[in-house]
Image (cartoon, rainbow, N blue to C red):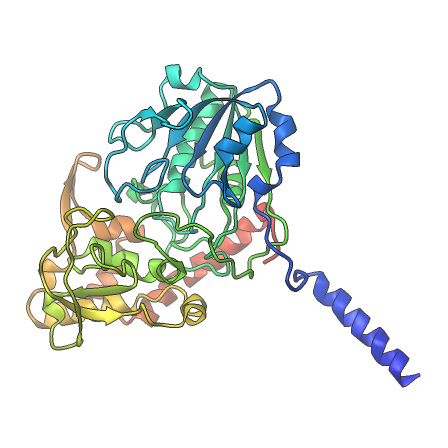
Amino acid sequence: MRKHCLCMLFIIVCFLLGQSTLAIGAAVIPGDARSEEYLPLLAGKRVALFCNHTAKIGEEHLLDLLLKDGQQVTALFSPEHGIRGDIPAGDSVDSSTDSKTGIPILSLYNGDTVIPAEKDMSKFDVLVIDIQDVGLRYYTYYITVCDLIEACSIYDKAVILLDRPNPNGHYVEGPLLDMSLRSHVGRLPIPTVHGMTLGELMNMAIGEGWLNLSNKLKFTVIPCLNYNHRTAYTLPVPPSPNLPNMKSIYLYASLCPFEGTTVSVGRGTEHPFQCFGAPELQGKYGYSFTPTSIKAAHSPLREGEVCYGVDFSQENELKLRAKGMDLSYVVEAYKIFHRQGAGEKFFMKFNSKRFGREMVYFDLLMGQTYVREAIMAGKSAQEISAMWQDDVKRFKEQRRPYLLYAE
C-alpha cells in the first residue's frame, strides 16, 4: 500500500511539474524545422527570405530546403553582417547575387536602405523570416525585421516568422529605451535585455502599436517546440563574427555598453566580447591584450595598443548565464579613468546628422541619459540597477499577453 501511495505521489508531482517545465531531454525544435507548418502557406507564392548563415536546419540552409521542395524563391534580404554572416559590425553590405542559386540579394544594411524600394517589394508575395537573434535591444537584427514588417504592411505582403530560441530569454534587465533616443541600436521601448524570442517581440511590437502599419498585416509565427524561457539553449551557429560562442553571448549585455566608451571589448582579438581593457587601466588589472585588424574586425578600437583589463574567456559558461547583465565593469572602469583625470575621454561623442547635435554613443546604447549621468555622479552599479527595476516590472506585465512560451 505504501509503495502504491509513493508511486501515485510521484505521478502527481511529475504531472504538476509538467505544467511548467519541459520533458527532460526533449530537443528544442526551431520554427524552421517545422516545415509541415509553413510549406503549405508558401504553395504557389513568390517567396522572399530575410535570413543569414544562421537559417540552417541541421546542416541544410533554409534556402536550399525551399528550393529542393520546389518553392519559388525570388529574393533574399540581407541584414548586418550579410547573408553569410562574415561581414564585420557596422560595415556596409552591398546588394549582389547569391553565387550558388543566382537569386538577387537585396541589402538592408548598406548605409542608405531602411525600407526596401517598391521595385524590390514587387519581387515577392510572402516574406519568410529566419534569423537567430540574441535578445538584446542593441543587437540590430530585430530592427531590420521591424523595417521589413512595416514595408510588407505598405505593400500588402504576408509575413511568416520562423521562431528561434532566445539564448538570453531567461531574464529581463536594463533601462527602457527613451524613444527620443531611438537609433540604429535601439528601435522599440523595451529594456536592454527583453527576454523574448523574435516571434514574441514582433507580436508585441504589432500588438502595442509600436510599428507604422499601413494596412492589416498578415503575420504568422511558427513557434519552436520543446522550448521555454528557462531553457539553456546553445546556439548551433554563431550569430555574428564577434559573438563566436555562448560566453560572448551571455556577456554581451554587460560588455556592449563599453562600445560607447574608449574601452575595448576585445574586437580584433581571439576573444571578442569575452574581455575588456584599455591602456588607462594599467595598474588595476594584470591581464592584457593588443587589438589588431582582422577579418572580423577592421581597424578595431585601440588597434596596436596594449590594453589592460579583465579576461572572461576561461569563466564557466553557466556561471556567466546565471549572472546576466552586470554594469559594474563599466562603473569601475569609469572610476579609474576619472581618478586619472581622464573622465572626459571615457564616453565617446559624435556629431549626429539625425539628432542635429553632438551625441554620446553610450546614451544610445543604454537608451537613456540617466545611466551615464549616474555613473559620472559616482553611483554604484547596484544603485543604478535599482533605478530601472520598476520599469522592468511593468514591462514584464506588459509583455505577458504576447509570450508564446512559459516563463
